Image 1 (tube, protein in one colour):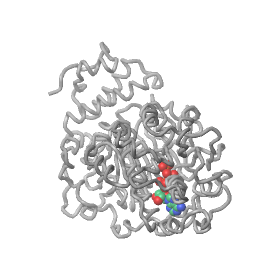
Image 2 (cartoon, protein in one colour; image 1 turned 135 degrees about the horizontal axis):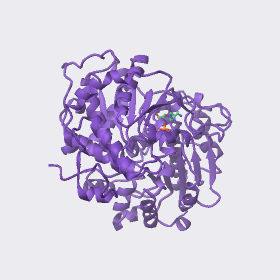
Image 3 (cartoon, rainbow, N blue to C red; image 1 turned 90 degrees about the vertical axis):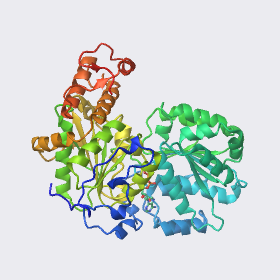
Image 4 (spheres, rainbow, N blue to C red; image 1 turned 60 degrees about the vertical axis):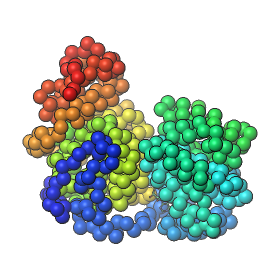
Length: 548
Ligand SMILES: Nc1ncnc2c1ncn2[C@@H]1O[C@H](COP(=O)(O)OP(=O)(O)OP(=O)(O)O)[C@@H](O)[C@H]1O
């Protein structure tokens, strides 16, 4: 891989772990994009210009419905101020899902379950009818929430709020869009909410459930007009459903208050039908732009797999893949590498920070402070190139313009999660590529998901040549980071033991191989209580003790 230009200071930038300090580490990663080395001589101004995306390319399959119509044709449906806002954002034509929602719903206040592929404009598809519904004489009194949108992650909440601000930017009387999510000071967020006029609130379930415990917060919802579940299948799966049910109990009962329910996602597995009824009236409208005979992922994304014998070869395969893909398109090389656990992602970031010091690398996962996550997310959105190592905190919904390649290392947690991760590339009509690296035990994922158009990676990769560089890079990583990644590897794969065709002994064996690949002289110590919680008590191969 020819080294891209060194950064201005010629430094490679060792870093302290931001999650070990409250504020972001003072390292090459936390300065503003302008000061950062660029892989290509991109012009920052060019990057900061808003993307005018050609959504016309999204039409064509039987489910997308006809051809692209301009928003200006909706003069009788949408307020001129909203049309002006859309125009200012560069949204000239409707995407298929926007067109379907805005022209096929019985009314803009109808309940709906909407499915559309990733990156095709679902955010505006739910914001526009909900906001227009308020403008049609349903505006709540000052201080009351009119629209509540619930989504799975903090970064997605910020992204939805930003799109809402764009759409409403030209309104004579601006409406305020507030956010509520964890990782920020509860007291100051709550006082801002209570002092403000949060006509629109975008929230993650945990923080919303928490603040709804306050009577003075609940009172703000007694004029609620619309509840949106973005990434609805994720919001209604066993992880979030309990919080969603608690939230609904705090809101005015739907049967009495009559608020509109809207559920949106690129994936709507069968199970979601059991739970949407808690948010949607019977007889809700179902709209889809996904042709049931088509692959669920975005059409234009060639998807490949690289199978390696054991977990330890995933590191060299990833290095070889990054090189092969960089050499294919060195300019604007913008990549997301998904790992399965926060600690595993942190380790990959540390490893390639040491192995590829000349590249601009980013990391995003749940062990980061919220300030660092928000800043990194914004920087990567603006970046013309770079490699983001991420966990599933950005696996769904997140819109990072111009990502040309998504790499998934190790087993995706489900077909839906795989689809959403691939959906971080090829957004709104652009092209993209996806490659998944799996070791032998994980190969079942491809066989058991035949609807995914995954083919073997077309180029033979000579991975052995990278072992020396990776060994040298691993030598620079502290043992604690490796131990955390090892423990997370064990914990994650323990939940898939059956599918991996592993018994407990076999699981510990592949985890130990993973540790040796990181240059650990012996399996990292793991506390007895952790072994107990994992249900691995007495399994040979574990090094039980207390790390210093
Ligand atoms: N009508 C439009 N014209 C031009 N660009 C658009 C239009 N609608 C959306 N976009 C842009 O397309 C990108 C994807 O939009 P959005 O994030 O809403 O997609 P999505 O369907 O919600 O994706 P995901 O399934 O990943 O959540 C964003 O950059 C957005 O600004």
